Length: 147
Image 1: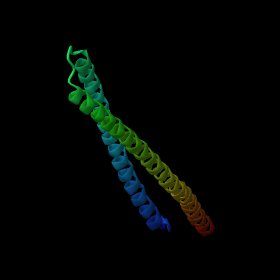
Image 2 (image 1 turned 45 degrees about the horizontal axis):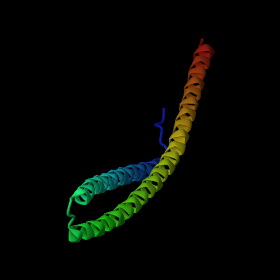
Image 3 (image 1 turned 45 degrees about the vertical axis):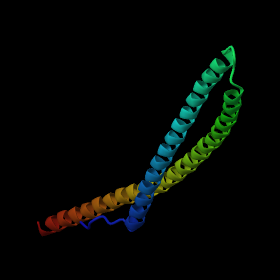
């Protein structure tokens, strides 16, 4: 019986490598999203701490106007940082979604070749079984004709 050989095996290996690379890229994008979200959480916590500080400043009997002015400026800076970080989170999420779609596409391409390989292997086994059966039939006919 001849050995099964899938002619597109090299292409399948290339697509599997592309799938692994897409998986690595998705993992990197997931880490980027997590990092951006951690930074966003940190800025939000900083904003809450600053709001508490600002409230304490305003409660003083003789508020220091220079501190209040500086605090207001710092609030503006925090809000700008917050908006910039929200944009970074959005970009990281978009990148993750793009990489997830690329991985899905790679997996589909691999699945198509895997199914074709499976189908060809099954076909090969059927042909081999038919050849073996034909050989056995021929041997049986030769034995009967000698007898």
